[in-house]
Picture (cartoon, rainbow, N blue to C red):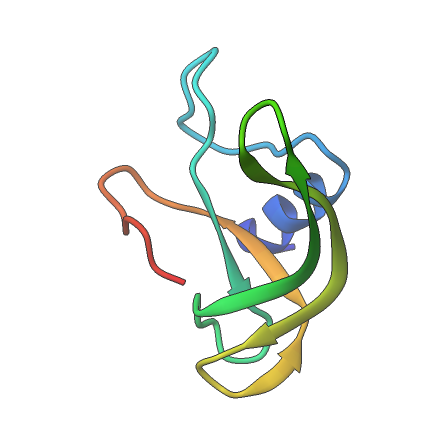
Amino acid sequence: MSEMERVAAETEQGSPILPDVADGEAPRVEHACERCGGIAVTRDAWAEWDVSSQAWVLSETFDFAFCHQCHRETRLVVRAVAAGGREGGG
């Protein structure tokens, strides 16, 4: 199993195992298209208006994902972002 496959599998289980992450430090990951590897991806989701914070709050995400690089429905893979890696994207 490749490192990317291992990270994706562990992340789906809710406990990503990423190398070189200091204790207490949140691991940096990116979501990428399973088909082309691009990171210009989106998912369907619901947002609810929160009166107290006066902001839209994400309440649910769904399985449907779309890649805006290869213009296809896709599945997302989660992969580690190396130190000094990309910022933003998508």
